[in-house]
Length: 288
Image (tube, rainbow, N blue to C red; front, top):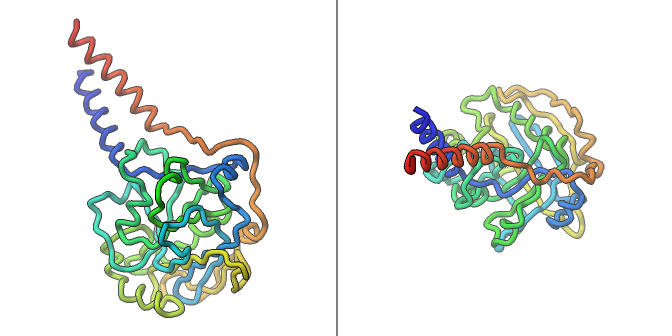
């Protein structure tokens, strides 16, 4: 009975290893940030907008620019996860920005497909990496050695990451809320998303429009960073969003010297041990 059970576990590990690789990791290390060439005083801006007249502005850092990228992107803002999207998942024909959690990169995933390239293949115009446990996300050295396929930004503090993620509550009461990458829900909102991208603000509830603006020599104009204004709770009603903790995004991020960028993959280690046990058991059966 042990042999079949181990075989099932090994096959399961193989399935997980076919998931897209997230080529980034969370860190609190100034050394890791410097080595990655990341500037946490970057004044690039992410603006989130939702119906009705709700908005949030947060300072972000440009981690990598695509060969043909401008750093500017505007589109629907959605979570994008290797656990929910595969190569077989359909692409969409409306502009969108991938919100990728680098805390979840320890999936024992395959190096054949990375999550940023996967987002590009589904039509994403840019990606924003975030961590709710660490100061920021840094791209892996292997990925940084490739030609980037998307402009990739990262958040500058765990507080700002949580603040961004919280804004999805503004749309959860809507019909077909577009929170995660979902081709069917994209299709439901395509017309209104397209109109919002071409216009000035969302014209209906159910989705968030994000605008990424790179730092310029003259600075970025607009309201104060970290400001949350207006906005109904996604059911079309107007109201006032709270600004809990947003003032911390105004100041520079706090980073410790400890290096937490190398987050071990518990799943990978577990699978490696099981595969070793499987190999040993098989050899014992074959040669006994």
